[in-house]
Image (cartoon, rainbow, N blue to C red):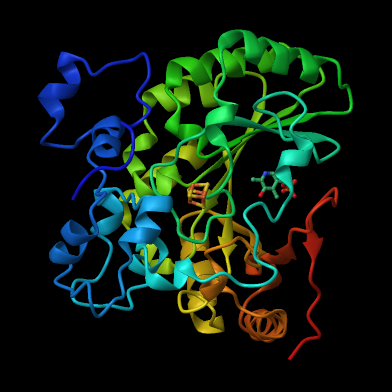
Length: 354
Ligand SMILES: *Cc1c(COP(=O)(O)O)cnc(C)c1O
Ligand code: SF4
């Protein structure tokens, strides 16, 4: 109903006549972004579901707005209240529970914020908060309480961040992070990438994004214009949690990325009621393989306030993981990991085998 969010972050580049001409054939990604569904009524009406039955919470939507792009919605099954894509985006009553151990900033990122836009906790690689926005708001997100607005950057602040990178010779990889970095416009991303490519000790550019998953048209010529044109070796880590998220449109975008020399990886969050099942996870790995993506990480949920209903206990996670290992070749088994505040890398969880 009411749009609680601010307008989508379509910064300096406005739509051109050319965009307008093609709108109804295949809308470009910015158009898709601006058309995201923010109303639970609209979403459930489209899916022919009853808001009461699903315990929809407007209060939850107020603290973290619902936002979901149409290309993602179209992959949901009409009439299925347990649809695994729907459950990732629908604000429900369970989010209002507080749970011991679940806090607003479980990763203590506020402690690693040396320069605005920089979260420096890994030794050789440096994530940059390139865009505070996302095209989709995932209910389990550990960044749902992060003060993104304080990390909004001016060009001068970016110069400061670049100077910081230049002064740290041990950093050889820059990670475009967020929010979702691909929510930023290509002109800015092109500028930033060029600056980074000018720093001799940086070898790799990694992009952590869910945007191509939820709006596959994000992968376009403008994107390749900066992502694959410098000396930096590009790596993209997608975020896909369920095989139903992969359709032909997404597969085509991924194929283009691979064809342009981007190493394609995926990370998944283990989510109760969505993918906490070896069958579902092995189907996901197989589908990823089919489109040329290597499963990289399977994360335990970060213990963020409002997401405790998605938590799969560690023992259950290990059990599922052992079953997954029994079903897949090693190269299709993602690493089961958890993020521990203050640690310099993710912590791998070793399962005992089935
Ligand atoms: C885990 C993680 C990193 C560091 O990744 P590695 O693959 O462990 O080097 C960087 N950014 C984000 C958002 C991550 O989740
Ligand atoms: S940062 Fe990733 S997981 Fe969090 S809301 Fe954005 S797209 Fe979803």
